[in-house]
Length: 350
Image (cartoon, rainbow, N blue to C red):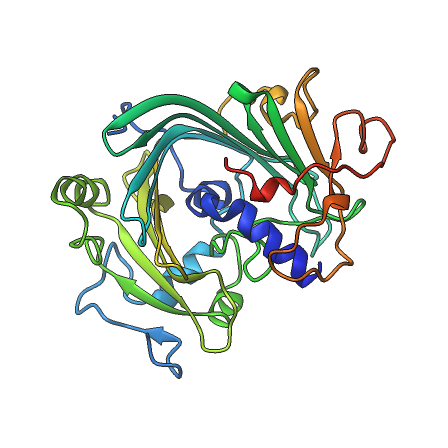
């Protein structure tokens, strides 16, 4: 995959870091007992052991990363409510979205060793709150393993990007390649090649939040363990800091279970902070997720922009290639591949 495609994919899916936390999560997830209400590190240091006492049973970041290596072994489906909050550093405002997320691993039952996992996901946001103004505003994202789709139902508009070369497999969660640097189900050594890792207590870094949010957030992550990742010198990354919270689930015997992802927080190079909380998580439910949830086909009568895969191009950042897009009536769904004069959808307000 070319550098340009990685950049574009990261820009498109940057908001889903926390969502990726759900997508990659594994064996520890269990249904919540009752519904919840959505209301530089030194360049030479890779592992730092800060706590005097273990946190949630872990004494170091290395120990936590080892536990995360097998966290997705039995994960087939997952669904959860999601609360996504973004604080803009320059503008000083805050946006909050609430919705639902679905994930499915559709890999072969017994894949060959080294074969990439095949994963797809869908996210539907139902509301948007900016300041004190709350409105119903549906926005949807789908990734089917090859195509990434953004839907804006109120506008009957859809943007469809082919982010994987036809015939190839791509794991959007693979650190260093995908847009979601989530160390779950990935090798500890691969994580540490890119990031300095620090084990932290759950309330670390939350004191700067507004008092109401701070109280709610500290309560939400209580009894969890926090992992902070900072890109190592020389590593190119969209985020300057990544914080992930996990909880240990219990089994019927009362013994500690596997890790359960709880929250994620990232800071990008502009200083914007994105926080995602996962609520009412259900793993491997008996009822299958409807196939329509992952549908990436173009609805009839919609204004659709299709962007075929162009992984061989090293485009300069900020370029606007009209030939990358085709409109409804063109593209892979009907065999046409005529260029469009439509503006690059990435430059349109969402």
